[in-house]
Amino acid sequence: MIEIKDIHKSFGENEVLKGISGKFEEGITNLIIGGSGSGKTTLLKCMIGLHQPEQGTVYYDGREFTQLNFEQRIEIRKEIGMLFQGSALFDSMTVEENIMFPLNMFTDQTRSEKLDRVNFCLERVNLEGKNKLFPAELSGGMKKRVGIARAIAMNPKYLFCDEPNSGLDPKTSIVIDELIKEITEEYNTTTIVVTHDMNSVMGIGDYIMFLHEGKKFWEGSNKEIAKTDIEELNDFVFASRFMKAAKGKM
Amino acid sequence: MNFTNFGKYILLLKAAFRRPEKTKIYLKAIFQQMDFIGIGSLGLISIISTFIGAVMTLQIAFQLVSDLIPKTIIGSVNRDSSILELSPTISAIVLAGKIGSAISSEIGTMRVTEQIDALEIMGINAPGYLILPKILAGITMVPVLVIIAMVLSLSGGYLGGTLSGAVTAAEYMQGITTDFNPYTLTVMLVKAFVFGFIITSVPAYEGFYVKGGAVEVAQASTRAVVVSCISILACDYIVTQLLL
Image 1 (cartoon, rainbow over the protein chains, first blue to last red):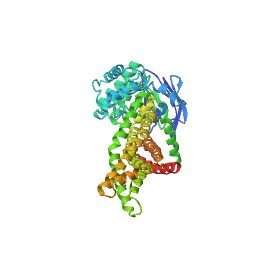
Image 2: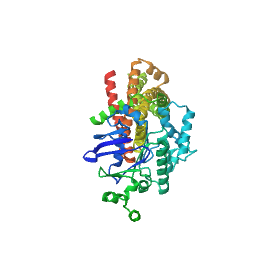
Image 3: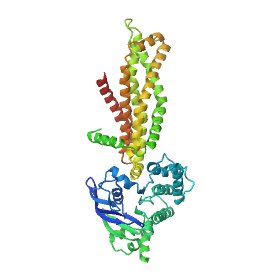
Image 4: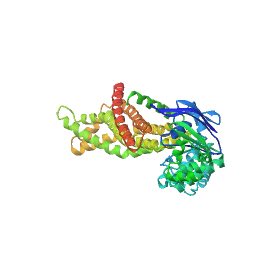
């Protein structure tokens, strides 16, 4: 479980996060949603230590993370897997080398053991046999899946996904969403997905935190979101005519 | 580079020199960088040094027209100029353009495509993994390249002088061996070491803190070369002042 308490973050005069608190449980898919500029990616970066919040704390299963220095954070970071918006694959390495990279850095496994793990991860994301391809040779959806394979290579306890569906067609988006959900349930990870994709919200949102203007505006599940009367949330979730019509039928 | 940037540069270097997570992987990266910096620059340095040596000989011969000055002086002046200034400094400036822009672009692109963030999330010391091997390869290979540049510059001087008839082979050889002070080689190697550090660390800094996209990466690359060249010239003066 990851718990955040009173997170504040500013960039110059612009206060992006205005005291956000919440709990993200393991074994379920936790979504952080909100419009552009609502602070969801900044919150994610504060949680994983890429941004240092001015105020507030982040706990990983009770372990305080925010005040730790780089060396102290390493132990927690070894338990984190992350899927980036642009996949962030190392473009000078093959798919196999990308997935093997954290294993090379942090384990003393033999090459054959590491290769077994790589092949298992690739199989898990339905990319068997793509070991020797370079990121430039992959489609957007394949890159995301390799990103997931790399993220789960070290058996993470915590899985973060930043806009996993951006730039993907709806069908591939659903494949990625389902993969994230399956992995979360299979490995009982604490999964946090930052998204503004409504298919993801309705499809895998076991717990949803809605951010608006740097504040937590609403929290609940995908079942509850359809019944809410909060105007800001409805404006965001049911922005299109199609979604408005769909809500009317719910 | 203002004081804030200099402070960030020092902090980045401090982070780069943290203990490596896995020595074997860092060693592999160091050898890759040594290949890139050393072997990859050998052709360019060879051509430039040979021609500079040849041109230097011709120009010294052109200026020393008096019958009172022995022609062996041509070799002596070429030798000292090559060892003390031309081989280390010109090589370093050329390498700053070739290697510096490559380092800055590589690290800058990794920054804007979130690859550096990915390293940090994995718990890897990104400055150490990305910058340390480049610095170690730079301070090792740049002195080697400068030694090669010196040899080729003197050889180029021999070829240029003898082929043009500006100096005979015997006079040139006598010139480069007479009153040779081995200490000048020490000065050359100290300069090469310092320049090797600048050529790798300054562009790494410029690339590491890039924000934005392709345009900013290109701007950082240009800035890396400019700042490296100015730093090389400033350090050239300081080292010369301190050691001679």
